[in-house]
Length: 346
Image (tube, rainbow, N blue to C red; front, side):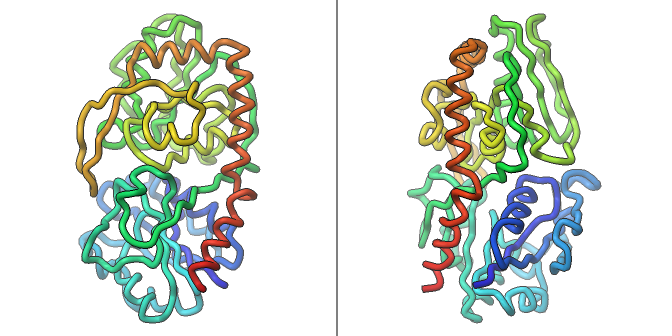
């Protein structure tokens, strides 16, 4: 059995996700997509493709204006699928003709979607299987589907304990402040303990609210060469307003860091309830889907930060993070992936 991965070689979340897949799934080949010329890309930034991550693999540079079909020449697709049994794509195949050509050649296809960017239901060709990275809106996904969590490479992280130390990962700012950055900044004025907050963002963002004297805010604007170096211990604050898969949450757990998160799906389906902060509905946004989004109460978020400053509470939370770490490791989840591939080929 050979798997063909549609991969990214940049520093985005999809870049990290596809590189770890390529490194862990046996007998895997890749079609490496360069997205640096597409609208919204950051030239010479996080979208810069480092093809050395995928030695001797096929490459294709995307161009703007092709839409959902015709973005990748047939000859490139034909070469890619000529010797694989399954094509695995993350979020998008970049050219939906791939699904048609695979069906014609007897090659199975899997799309590990992010729900907010899911193009289905649609007249577009369907993959043979939708792989859900979380249970968020799972019931609304049409067709053949399976829950297939995204593993994290736990071997790359160096766990450390840092009391009264918190990290907020902005990543690349998304619509409606998806990761709750402004929520975090507005909540800091209610924090009572003396704390340090490291704020990581892949591009500069405004900080409209000055933190109080008891809060040492450390903004870091830039791209960390190694994503796992963003997690040095302490607690991750990530009051997301919407969304399913969260690589920062997985990565924090890999570093044995507890997480302060919003009490919404899918967080409340797998994180300890004492890590969660209540929310209120604050609007509806339109991506590929119509989505509700939620805001944490600022005072409650601050109170949760203070709670994690309690040494006993923090130590118990670290132990729970260690347990969750094992459930999302490649060692644990790779057999699930292989079983999924084998079942699809039956």
